[in-house]
Amino acid sequence: MIATARRPTRFARHLTDSRLSNLALASQWRNGDRLSSTGHGSVDGHLYFDDDSLVVESDTNGERVLATVDTGAVTTDLYENFAKQFTKLINKEGTKEKHDIRGVGNALTFDAVTLPRLPFTLGGMAVVLAPAHVMLKPIGNQRCVGNFGMDLFKQGRSLLIDLRAMRLQLTP
Image (cartoon, rainbow, N blue to C red; front, side, top):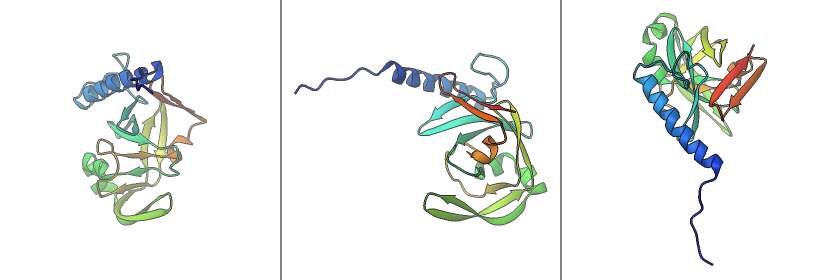
């Protein structure tokens, strides 16, 4: 049997091209350029792949944030990066506590700060995380402020994850 290199499928080439262009857009965004995939306007709901994570752009308290998309997570968890980006908010409204993060088959307890209410714009819709638990330890994707779960996504009537357009949309 002779081994031959397989050419990537059209879909695989599209994902690779999309990932590169989406990472470039995310890099522009992190450098202060507020560009969407069309070159203008809002980037809310824009998706891209970062290693093995699907990442969405959102905003809270007037600032853009990145978070992983986890439709298998019942709750949203925010990480140390959120606490660093929103130090004033954490100090003003936060209450220190211990909080459990539950996964498949286990639970881990972390030092955390709880905010009573945290609004986001996600996928073109206003959603609220109440309460919002912010872990005070670097967890998950280090480019993200947290992991968005179904408690945010279920606030919409429907959730659309369009990998061709690399957009996440919530329908009110």
